[in-house]
Length: 227
Image (cartoon, rainbow, N blue to C red; front, side):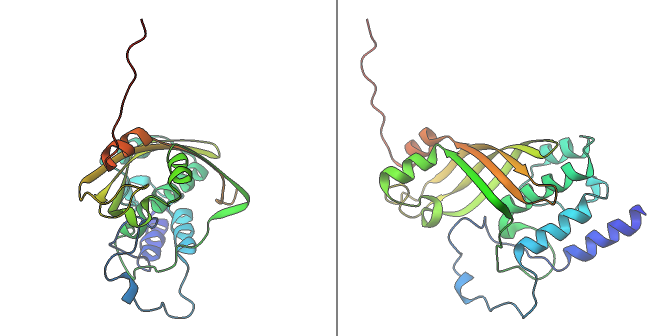
């Protein structure tokens, strides 16, 4: 049975994509010239869901691992004793965080798709405040070669708790600051809640906006210490 499920995962992975950066970032130089997928090509969401369902039924050590997971978090997941539902949710989170960097075989997908359930709610703290203040969308166009490195992940029931480092280069306007060409490295953390069929129903994210602000070129000024 295990061998048959492993074969299913490998076969499913062969229709997926490779290369690139996180889907939330700006397209790469060759992105605009990419030809349209053939009719009937599965959406990105459909591809992720197929692989997640297959991965939930086999040993995580044999997964075609999404690129976002660091070796440390892979080890924790393999040894975590998670249920099939929790493994499916874990795989979905990692695949979405990896963007076009996962999976490593087959035709590269071109459509992100929507994996949110009806009634989906997003609670964002940190970067959202900077977006509102500067009237810009921040990462889109501001950071190139973006990669998410997930180094903490815990699943329990319908929830996945996750923390990751965003890495990239400041090559465009970032929350009002002009490009510096410098490396950006910022931590975000969040909680994702899933429905029984694997759709995301709620996300709570918080970002280290102070780190982003200073790395983008912002200056800090503190008042004198109170007497």
